[in-house]
Length: 382
Image 1 (tube, rainbow, N blue to C red):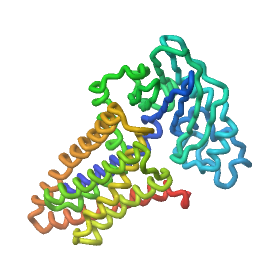
Image 2: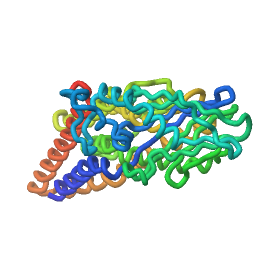
Image 3: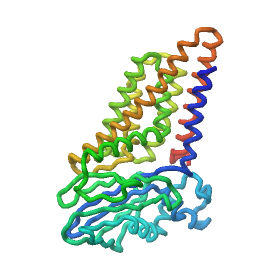
Image 4: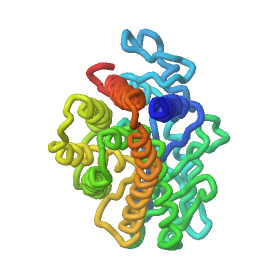
């Protein structure tokens, strides 16, 4: 029964924590800066759900405009807003969105502020994010400083915001990470060594708070009987997601989120049920590798590196991936020894039966979570 309690507590903690993120959560912002003649262009991607709650984007639509597929939950609940509703809402309130993002993203050269133009473009990106393109008029010379106050804690919708800034300014190419404690940076004046822990921590957070990735690892561990099994599946998963993470981050591979996210959820259910229905695991490594490719595309959603790689962006990308691997190893190091101990301790028939029932219950719970997420994320089912 100890196994049942342990696994039930772990799964319950993950499932209960997931919806809580709607109220106490972190979000990410991506900013791409480019020199454009005497000015600078900025392309900003922000999370639609956070912006929608802040500016009441969905609630301003009339019931007739929303129609039968309307928004569920005017109080900011985590209901899935249909894509067409999102587009109409953004079209109707493009000026408000542009004013908010342009007012919170400030650029300056040599302490002289740049001026954002009035021709901002607001659209819904393929990833589902709100994309705002801005053009700034700046002084002709001087180092460019970027400050972002997009989604401050005082806005009341998020507790923490990570802002990934990629830049190609005056021949200087690289990236930097802004957060609550560091809201501004000077382009080309970032220390590579100081960025490593920031991006490593970002990678670790992306895995630990990406509950679908954690449950996928748990499903793999439930099917592992020996340390060799763990090493093999962990290696296959690591190699696969590292490949697509890099390729997607630099823009060589791209799949929209509405395809990747449902398939990631389905991978959780598949591996969990496979533990029950297929005792033989000869096919496990190819399956894990294939699903690892999908999870790498999901990890890449936190990063965006456009154009040729520079030393700075390469270091940041590697640091981010190292953070993911360290978090993955921590989960394995905490979970698998406990599972192994409980299996070896089940020496009596009642304990063996409890072990079997606990494993089945955990696999069913994990598979159920994956299927629920698949239904929530699939555009065909929402």
